[in-house]
Amino acid sequence: MGQVVGLEGTWVRPEDVAEYRRAGYWPGILLTDRLWEVAKHDPGRVAIVDSARSATYGELADEVVRLAIGLRGLGIGAGDVGIIQLPNWHEFLVFHLALTALGALTVNLPPIYREREVRTVARSSGAKLLVVPERFRGFDYTELARTVRADASSLEQIFVVRGSGPGCLTYGDFMEWGWERLRGLDESGARGREVLESLRPDPDVVSALGYTSGTTGEPKGAMHTHNALHAINVSVIERYRLTERDRIFMPSPLGHSLGFTHGARLAVYLGATLVLQDVWDPGVAVELIQRHRCTLTFAATPFLQDVVYHSAIERADGLRTLRTFLCGGAPVPEQLLRDAKERLPNTFVSAYYGITEGGAVTMCPLDAPQEKIVGSDGKALLGMQVLIVGPDGEPLPSGAEGELLIRGPQNVIGYYQRPDLANAFREDGFFCTGDLARMDSDGYIRITGRIKELIIRGGVNLAPAEVENILFEHPKIARVAVLGLPDERLGERVCACVIPQPNETLTLAEVQEWMARAGAAKQKWPERVELMTEFPLTAAGKVQKHVLRQWIRT
Image (cartoon, rainbow, N blue to C red; front, side):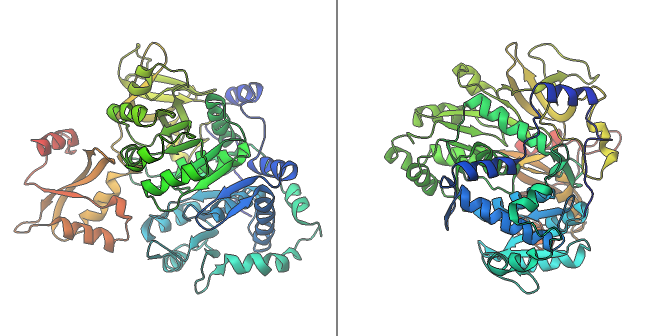
C-alpha cells in the first residue's frame, strides 16, 4: 500500500475547503460512483468507441471490476501509483477507473514520451505499475518498459495492451483468466463490486498526478483530489449545458491533461458517449464526428486549424451536429477563430485557458459577444477566482498586464513529494501561474505571454532547461539557449541557439540525432538551430532570451 495523500498539511486553506463544501463544489462524488450509477440504470448505453471496438456502460463497469480485483490481487492498493501510457484506446479508461476504485493514483502520460521522460516520472512518483501498448506508430513500448523497470526500483508490474512482451503481463490474457485466479486472494470472500465498495477512497485524497515540467525542467506531479477533478467537470457541464445525450469526440491524447480531463473523465461523469481517435487525421476526424453525431470536442490549436481548413468540411455541411469546439493548450489566432465561425456555422468555437495545476480556469459563455469570443480566453468558471497582479503582488486595474493568479475548487493541493515548491501558492490561497494576462472590465481575460519560459508546441508544455541540459553535453557545443519561436500551426517550435566549441560547427541533423540518442520525445527536438558567437547577457550572466528572439528575427 502506498502513501495516501489528503488535505492535511497541504497548501489548501481550511476556510477554502469549508467554502467549497458549503457551495457544493466538493460534494464527495467519485468518478466510479457515476460509473456504477449509469451501469445500473442504463447498462446498454454506449460508453466508449475507439478504433477497435465499442463498449456499453454495463460492459465498461464489468471490465473495470474484473481489472480492479485482479490489480488488488497483484498488490496494487490505496496510495499506489500507476502510470498509464496508452493511445486513445478504451483500455486507458478501464485502467484509470480501476485504479480510482482501489484508491490508487493515476499518472497519465502521452504515447510520444520516450525512455527519458517515462523513467523520470516513474522514479519521481515511485510508480508501482506501468501500462503500455506493445507497439504504436512503429515504436516498441515493451522495450521502453523493460528499460524503465531496470532503472525504477519501485516498478513491480508492467501490463502490455493489445499485444505482449517478455516479462510483462498481457492485458487480454489477464482479463480472461488472471483476475479469476487472483480473486481468491480476497480475504473477505466478497465478490466484485462489493469488494470495491468496501475500498472506496475518501474524495479528499489525491486521485491523479498531472506531471508538468515547469521552468526548471524538473518533473512536478500536480496532486488532484477526487473532489477537485469533479469540480473541473461540473464547471464545464454548467457553462455549456451538457447532458448524458452529448457525444464527446476526443482526438487529443488521453495521456495529456486536456484529453484526460475533458475526454475520459467528463464522458463518464456525464454518462455520455466518448468517441476516440488514436492517430490524428483531420479527414478521419470529420468522418468520425459525422458518423457518431458528436456534439462536443476539446483540442489544441493545431487540431482546430487542421479541421477548419480541411476540404472535407464542405462535404460535411459544416459539421452540423458539433455544437461546441473548445480550443486550449496554446494561443489561438484571432483569424482562425473568425474563419472557424464562417466555416463551422453550427459550432460555438472558442479559446479557453487551463493549466495542469488549475484545470479549466476560464471559458467563454455561450452568449458571449463575438468580440469577446475572438479576442479573449473567456471568463472564470464556476467557483474559480482570477486575479491580475503586478510585481509587488498587488491587484492591477482593468486592462493592465500582470501575472495571472487563480484560486478555486479545481486547484491542485500541492506537488507530489515536493514540499519545497510551496511558494507556488500565496498565503491567501491563490496559485501563481507564471502566465501574463490582462482582464477587462467584464471579467474576460487574455493570456499575453509567460513569465516562465515554457515553450508551448501544439498544446504541450516543453521546458527549455531540459533540452538545454541534453544539448549541453554535446561535444561540439560550448553554450546553448533554447527558446520557442512563433509558428502558425503549432503555436511555437523549438529553436536552439548554439555557440559551438572553437573550430567546430553544427547542423540541425546532428542536434536532432543527439536528442534521439538521449531518448527525448520528438516534440522536444529543436526544429531550428542558430549558430552564434555570443549571447546577450544580464549583469548576472543570464541569457536574455527576449533579445535572442529579436536577433533571430532580424
